[in-house]
Image (tube, rainbow, N blue to C red; front, side, top):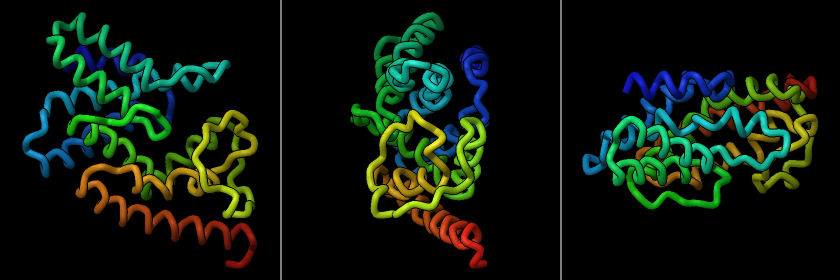
Length: 213
C-alpha cells in the first residue's frame, strides 16, 4: 500500500484534488462500507487511493478531452499489474475508478464502485464542499460570486471558460443535486445534513453580496 500511495502522491499537485482529498474519500468510503459488510474492503481502499490519479492531467489538458476517470482506470490497471495484483481485483478497482465521476457516462455496477462514487461525492458537499469550491475558484481565477437567474442553471455541464463560473454557480448546477446521484442509504443520510448547510451558506452569501446583510 505504501508504494501505491507514493505513486499517487507524485501525480497530485492540485489543492482541491490533492492527497488530503484522497484520504477524506478513503475515510468516507470506509465509513460507508461499515454499513455494508459484504463489500470488499481491499477493493474500496485501493480504488479510493487511486481514484483521482489522473485528475491533474485532466485539469491541465489544453484540449479539454481527457477524462480523469477513464484515464485513471487505465493507469490503475498498469500500476496494479506491476505491483502484482490479480486480474479480477484489478478489474474491480478499474471499474470503480472509471465509474466514480459525477459527469461520467459509466455508472457503477458493483457495491464497491457505488461506495467509492458516494464517498467522492460526499466530499464535494457540506463545509468541505464549500471550502473546495472556493479553492477551485482561486485555482482557475473564477469570481467569488456571480449574480444569476437560478432558473437558468439546472444542468451540470463541463466548464471550459472559468471566467464565467463561480462557486455559487457550481452549487446551482451540480452540488445541490449530488444527493440524487448517491447509491447507498447511509451516504444519502449524510448528504442531507451537508446540503442543508450549503443551502444556508449560499443564501447568506447572496444576501451579503447584495448588501442586504
